[in-house]
Image (cartoon, rainbow, N blue to C red):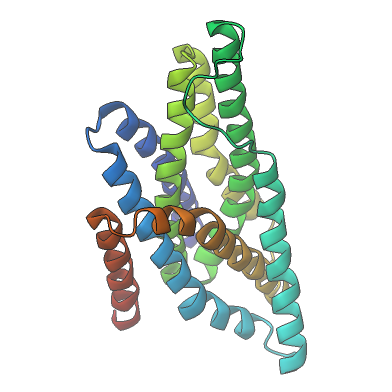
Length: 255
């Protein structure tokens, strides 16, 4: 039963990409929703890392000395950061304005599709690894898994908005968009399914996966979301998102 619930959580995390797509198509105040979701994800992720995941990591490395625990923690957390850094390098910097040096509209549309496609591929690979870690964490501690799902899932909303905007501006047909969106939605679940098929995970392996998760969450928070928050700090939606995230973390401690 715990395995099924853990798989459902990974699927729900991926479905939030679709929420970002729908917001892009339907919502009037896209900027406000983007700022709120990014800020909420930022505060939840950092709270999750320092309040829950780091203590869980040191508990998983239980039989080792404190010195070895610290070395393992720093080494594997850095690996988690580097993994996302590599994936991030696959995503080119892009803007949504027209490029006057491009020869024609078709070339411009092809460029936008290329940006969206590369972003999708990088995120699919990233989400498979993240889904593996999310499933493992949820199976170990449902409370922690649920909090990670909130943080990562809310990060998926603005990413879904970003990809949707690229595809919309590129005038991509419905079939291609549908395939890309489906792969994004299922990628986190696929990672969870892989974790489900690999049984008998030791405490050491669990600790390593938690370190990878910790590194990924830190990277997303500090290198992707923090810049967005800084640029919108005076925005009421951003402030409300930060406050809501803090409230969620506090509630998680008392419930």
